[in-house]
Figure: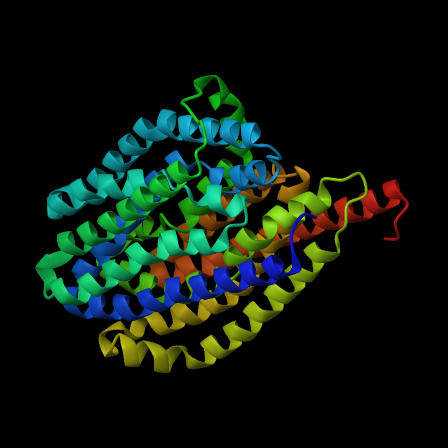
Length: 418
């Protein structure tokens, strides 16, 4: 495999620690901002984030996974330079589209009118998140570098929030600090890449290939974004703004629990891609990771479900009590999200079956939006949380059938036992 036992153990540990810190800090900062801003302004900050993350997707485009795979499979320095050149060039081509989408979303959501300063600095965040170089370090299994590059600016950001953000009118300042932290990540990553002495250049002739490889993942993530990250925009359009705040509080449970597979994807995707690229694919590691991550998520979800009331009342205070049933619903959804993500990232994507994600994502989108039409007007943010669970059930059924057929089919083809 080309991966030492030491690295195979160290990298998952580093990514899990980073994942925990990445959500631990927001679990401290988010209640602070929620109390300082109040439900209405906190809802606007959540909506601003939804605009940023949705728009940045049009620049990141799914390269986070396709580029990790391409980088991991770059056996020579020339191949790595070519990969780096193609991905960076593709991101630059997509940059204007991301900015246009951001402008439309912030105008539609009213952020431009209510918080013009936050809307302006958000452009920095869109470019920085969309232009991330995390895939470069992850593809080379440089976990320590990848974690440090992202973690340092975030730690500084959180410290400055407690020092500088004090009242409801500081929404723009929180947005600025978040944008500068994202920019800091880009600056640090660029400096480190220059130290690798790669002769990379703008390679617009390779943009089409890079975009084509990432398109199935982009479609899947776009649909996911519409019924996940962009849900606050939908709630704001069909309900009161305060419901957005309650949804975001409950969604923190899903982000932490459902995101457990993300650090392990960064750690194991390069190794799994190599295992499954041969004529006789080895499914053992993939199945083991899917089982362990899903089981761990379910165990943590049960604990979180039982403790949701205590956590929310302690951290967010009684004015956010409406988020308790939403959080519990998201604990259930997190188990499905974790399972679906593991099946996609550890079985389908490494063997080039990412196109099935187009089917699952559009299915999830249809199920989510159709159920939200029924549930959102009556139940508010809770209806959106239930619709997320319904969508994930549909995805789980499809992915399970496809993965089962894929593994059994390849096992028969290679003469391996089913």
